[in-house]
Length: 470
Image (cartoon, rainbow, N blue to C red; front, side, top):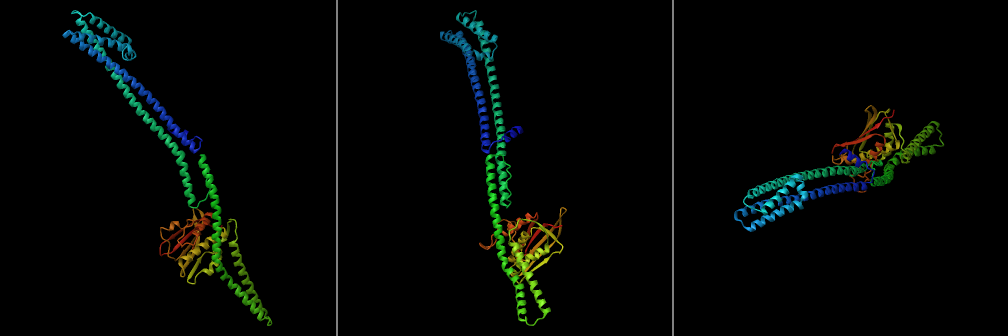
């Protein structure tokens, strides 16, 4: 069975051709079994006809004896004629059904039976008191032989019927066996690649847009895989556009914060310049030097803010570099400083020497999205805390980052969905549902992990694990 299964599944045909081949194989098996069954039924039919001739012969011998006895008892001419007619019938049956008798009697026995009937006929044609006992003995012997032949015929017919029944059962078993083999082969050929395709679709639905690897040999499924791969390329293109759009949206959100942050150094610069202009006639070199130093410091501060903003907004290829985590977090916080309500406190606890191996721009986008979510969750009053520490993952040095807020938390039934693309609990128009999905993808790009834990009324904590910079 395994060899037949392997032979069918190894045939290099298209899916439709394999299904057609399976149907043809089943049809051929049914035709073969049907032909065998027809031949067997025809054979049984011949045996039944032969049995009818033998039964007719035996019945004729009984009638022969009956009319013989009646003639001997009553001497009626009609009984004699009936007896003689049955003698002729017996001889005609032996002559016309010679092949049927040959199967039951040896040629010698058949010749002996014919001779006894002929002798019986001769004695009946010249009947007298002296040959009556001989006629009776011959009649008895003919009946005995006929009875033996009839019993043999019934036995053979019963054996043939039993053999036919066994053959029918064997045919049913073989048909079922072949059906199971071909059915399993078709299931393997059709269901397995379709199930694999279904698994790939489930993977794609979770946001994993890796191309299908062309594992199917069937032409139809290869064509479908090519179509899906083309669709995945389009999806990746659209996803990149969505990510860029989400980043621009985040950029727009933090611009007001950056404007607030820039306002402080610009105010200092403006004040210092006004003082210098007003006291230009009263030259105090030390005081002027102090004011010019402030102008220089505040100008550099404004430059750093503008540079960081430009760097964040610029489209760059993915490139990991070793960075101080604390500096990265502080620089990112400056983007949203102006957005943090006065009643919200942000606490950061990160060792100065803690390094991470990340793409700066993408990791800032992760932190911005998480900070923005936390601020939206807690409203005007609450705490946001971020702390990080070294960790070990199967001998690989990592960094664990926890971002916690004191917001209302996330219901348990929604927690598994928060990283799904386009999933959002906000009202229509208030969010795209891509923020956390993008966070998840960026962390995966860094060979890291992210998960969330939350309880209603107890806030939410995002746990990030990243490779450590060495």
